Amino acid sequence: MYIRLKHIVIAVVAIAVAGVGVLAVIFRPWEMLVGLHPQTQPDTHMVANNIDDEGNGEEVNESQTHENQPRFSYNELAMVDSTGEARGNTTGNHANMGIAVQSGDWVFFSTLVRIPDVDNPGLLFESRLHKAHIDGGKAEVILTVANATISNVNAIDGWLYFVMFPGGIHRVRFDGTSLELINDEGLEPTQIAVVGEWIYFNNIIHHMGRMRRDGSNKERLGEDFASNFVVADGWIYYIGVGAVLRWELYKMRTDGTDRTRLSESDVSGSLTVHAGWVYFINRDSPTPNAIYKMRTDGTDVQMVVGDDAEILNIFDGWVFYANFGSDIPGSLYRIRLNSTQRERISEYQAGGLAVVDGWLFNSNEMRPYGSVDGSFARGVTRMRHDGTEREVFQ
Image (tube, rainbow, N blue to C red; front, side):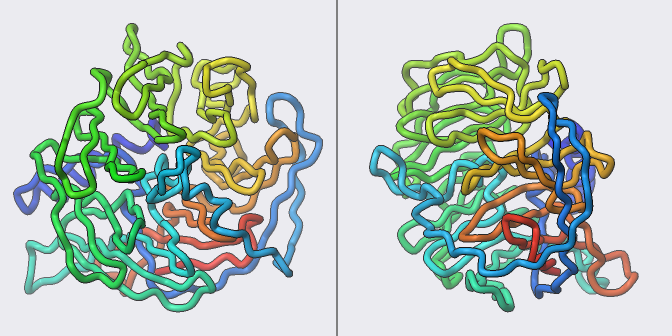
């Protein structure tokens, strides 16, 4: 998704926002989301068997209904770092622009919708923060902003921290009150991760830094240009520009010291850290854009699946990813960790993926909004981890 779609998204959003006098550059397409009322869709479960080492297999259609799926404890989503620090979202969700986050029994997610208004031609689109109970039901809009996107949502200590682009880092209470600007340094942040008392960020010119949660003690971390990062176990793992202008995998401590190159492979898209392994997308693989994993010290490099992948997230023993090598390019797949068991769980194109308690959120399904008046919306889909109980919020 980073390689194929980001330039299109940059052009579209830049043209749109320039219409009101602001130039916006959006680096990841799933920042533009939408969701209001769930509509249950038929469950179609695609199962792949007989997978070879390159991730190929025979697929068969199989209709399934979700019955008695266990509720996962949210502690399993690693909302507490091994260092004992609370985190605002999971590492996999952080790397996918934080389209959704859970706190207790509540899920918060961001959306975008364009509603043409002849009485207000300067209003090009609206972004919204929504709140919904984990068991489902109608989503409540707790915050609306005009002509800016909302992404990278983190939930910690009763506050939602997020990036408003353009506009800087903000926070708001869980009920949508007490909106505060944390930082507007001028170099717009494009990604944040809240861990402990720190907000780690990447800005529009790919410089990483951190600041206290109140915006104080801001400092740059390292000298690299980074396209994506996650914070795990006292380290920042990130995709940085190498010596030959390739995106390579690095890590450094959360204070910016001990920079280490983990891989010279050309990497792309999202990454995550799970149970002592770094998962990433390897463009140098014999099958391009295959998903690989390595130990957090850079050793024991292994292919996970040879599909042409973009974006990935991990939960409950599964790797979820968009497969552009499928007969339906970009459809959503999962593969069992340490196994060749692979399944297609949605025929719709996958965008940003967020995992909450028992559910997946996918942000890249286009849906019409209202009548044929030029309005648009980007759908947010909630589904179980096996693709069943699929609901489209629009």
